[in-house]
Length: 186
Image (tube, rainbow, N blue to C red):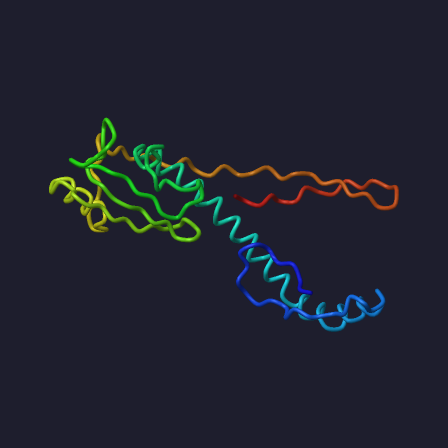
């Protein structure tokens, strides 16, 4: 006999126990309570927390995969045999001269999402040189994207005083009007 854990749980588990089925139910219950429950109760909370976190991470990957497919539609192309589940952590796309779509991407590649989809690894192959330079330029923290237009300085409006708000206090059926307290500034 063993405790039930969420599917995919690979953390600590209570050791299974063996009880004789020919024993009376009260004896079986006593063995479960004495030998299985303490260890099970010590591990199930962490297992449930891990399962909830895994579900949140899967939802984050699903949302990021949707965004990736909007940016690069061939990433989610249904003809791709390795498209996988909506919560997948790895996706591929074809592109360049070997692209299978009617309008293939400019280069082929792969994206691997972190477990919680807060970062990704990109592998891009067959990138035209000029496009590669533009991509690398985006990664350089010292370059500032070119802005269109002319910056126009704006003067900040002076802070206006906030009017105090009167308060009313109830004390065992009586009402008292208190003087207005100065309101906190935002």
